[in-house]
Length: 326
Ligand SMILES: Nc1ncnc2c1ncn2[C@@H]1O[C@H](COP(=O)(O)OP(=O)(O)OP(=O)(O)O)[C@@H](O)[C@H]1O
Ligand SMILES: [Mg+2]
View (cartoon, rainbow, N blue to C red):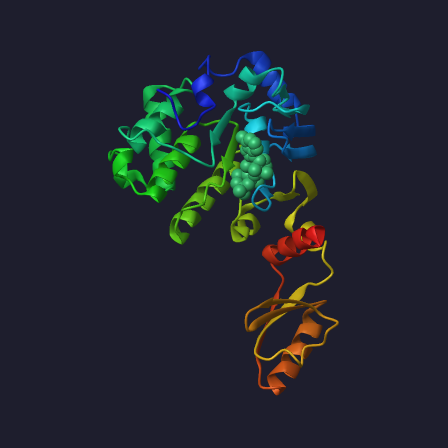
């Protein structure tokens, strides 16, 4: 069966890792390490430029970046679906260039554009990926059930994928990755197309997997997702990693910690502030909470509606990417 987890179809051995495998996995502290990874496509697009990333075992690591930044290219290389033009990466100590089969034994992948086989059910998929790990039928069924329940799809487990909605299909695919019991999960925009409730179920399932000691590498455009579930993050832009760290470290890259959202005329807003305009709304970035409160008081006196809030990852992301493109 050809699968939407395009890596798994190339699995040649479906047994549990050998003793030497286990030794290799125990020795390495990092789950994924990229060494100066570059990719130039045949059309000349430089999708990745000397990317260096290190993801520790048991970590949920998120890559965020604008459209075309190189996120999918990176995930496709480290999941051995694409070869780099230069550099290499290791997954649990195995080179994606020299030992792709070993890498594939330890990963499960959810690609950005998934196409489920219409005549199979979520249950077929979830059981199949559990069985690929060489698990017994009863253990495969247990994992499949757990994964489908985690993404709230157990009720629909016997409906063929052709008869599922887009978001339900996506959840079936995520469930099969969860049930695979792989050491490293690579998910390219897992939450796109999911409603807010389904997203939270998926987030919770992913955090649970990480607590069990697995490693997750994902990409997203949903800043709230990156903020809520990541242990560490990297921001990529135009094929270059512009920063990497935990949420606190990334937020410290901009000097402003607060913002004031104001609606109305602009002439009272001091031109020294960093202001982003959305129609009749303005976001004014300020250094701290005191400065934000003082500005709100001043704006309210001028009969404007104004609210203060701490800056979010989204604010920081937009500022960093914009400053590079100015
Ligand atoms: N098969 C391909 N051949 C040529 N160029 C490609 C190919 N795939 C992607 N690109 C280009 O490489 C760059 C990186 O694309 P990539 O898909 O990795 O970006 P992304 O960060 O995943 O974007 P998105 O957020 O839109 O999914 C883009 O400029 C894209 O147009
Ligand atoms: Mg992509």
